[in-house]
View 1 (cartoon, rainbow, N blue to C red):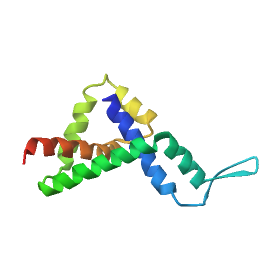
View 2 (cartoon, rainbow, N blue to C red):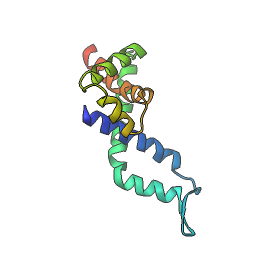
View 3 (cartoon, helix red, strand yellow):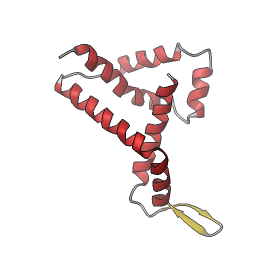
View 4 (cartoon, rainbow, N blue to C red):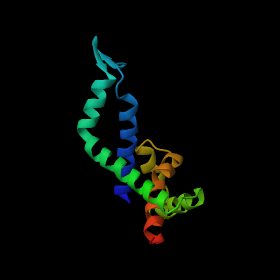
Length: 126
């Protein structure tokens, strides 16, 4: 479960990386020295980029396989997955961890879709 949350954080960082990629916009200015978003992107990529890229590739492969098998995920299935994860935490701890990661439940649901899709792909056996 913790790995799932770590994966979610990495995916969120990856999304930020792709937003910042290719832009020469200013990310920060420190004592008159500019730090561009490109420089920020490079630093973030160096820290988690390879893992993030592998995660994105895996998600795309899952999506393509599901499309071939005509498998999809409903909002209700994602909601059930979220509820099963919540059950593994003591009262209030799940929300605390989510807040520490800077995520909302809606963002987490989006991150859970590939996992639910993989489970359904595996169970479909086609």
